[in-house]
Length: 172
Image (cartoon, rainbow, N blue to C red; front, side, top):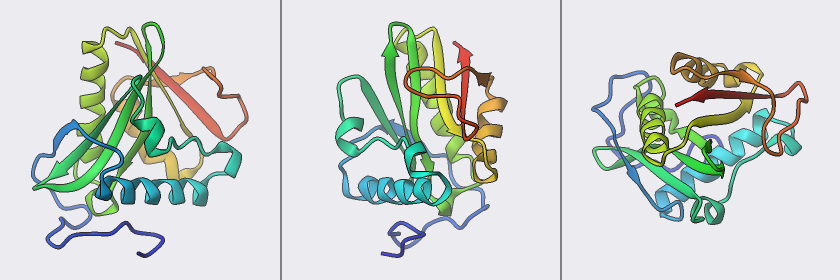
């Protein structure tokens, strides 16, 4: 498997084409196709981030009781994933948002984010936060979060104000 791209099945939608609406649902982060995209996600975070700023959760942590893991599939093909973790009473965190490169620009990331927002509301959370990077490779993610009401905030949890990481939050 190439280091820059996860394994693909045939018939995948090309980048920037309008894909059919993704189906977002609970999934198992240990599932083979998810594990491959999770490995790609980790490799990309190591590519664009200092090693001590990579906060990718392994599949075992994404399967924990306090985490809800969701995948987005288009025609049965994995298109992306994201997770919701309750970090304290009433406060959740978005973890491990990733869209497969073949589906970038097709609305998959937004579908995952909207699903996580609904899951957070359904769980009775009052606030949802996240951490992302500040450099250019993270700008599309920042824009997506801003579009859906997230605003920069002070670091939360174990995150620190270090000039690389950017924390964002919104009330639900």
